[in-house]
Length: 318
Image 1: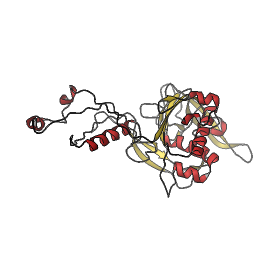
Image 2: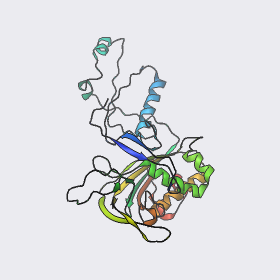
Image 3: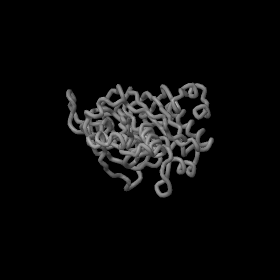
């Protein structure tokens, strides 16, 4: 049950290979944007201790982004954060009338109930948090740009993707695509498909979040298109693009702890390349867009930023 106004939008999706669009892979899908709030209820036999522990593990898995909802869950969609968790128990032998009078859908019955906390969790995953800062403009483009903003003379032909509230985002698919391609260069096709999944054989074992960019600056840039063979400007090929720069964001990655030592080393190398500006995200990478530096990195809650300074490929996993 939704308890706050939700906003849906349409996102265009394509498939890329070596930064080139794969033919006939574009499609549109409707998504519920970040920030929607809802409430859900679970009824369970309190005397079944095993089942109760398992439910608590599932709820913590939701909070830890190990359990997501809907489609494309390994690419930034379906993440839910539990902001309130409460529990009320009844003994039907002594409180049958109280249970019969109980209305779980009434907010008033929960107001005086304390928050419920459980330490029961699934193990077997590395949870990586990466705080990044933009080193250059970012361009993950959409072409439905709406109307001109205040004090803006022209409507841009394309702009960096944003939520309805105006916040710029880096989609999970963009993060995953950049990481996958660089990982493939280090580990090869077979190992990449085993970790990142393949279209026909297996689903991805590594998951990425969508990142909301804070404190960024939007800039309109007038660009032209150059013929790659003659190096001349194409006739009439002038367009306005709105991109964002100078922002900060957080990326969350979950990966199973049973991946090989070589895969850990290759994944560390990808993260180090991101920090050095050698791995770009989004479009126009060949002209300097999409570069980041890492301000902080932690694995399972432990600060590992020092590993970047020491170029310690294995330190992230110890």
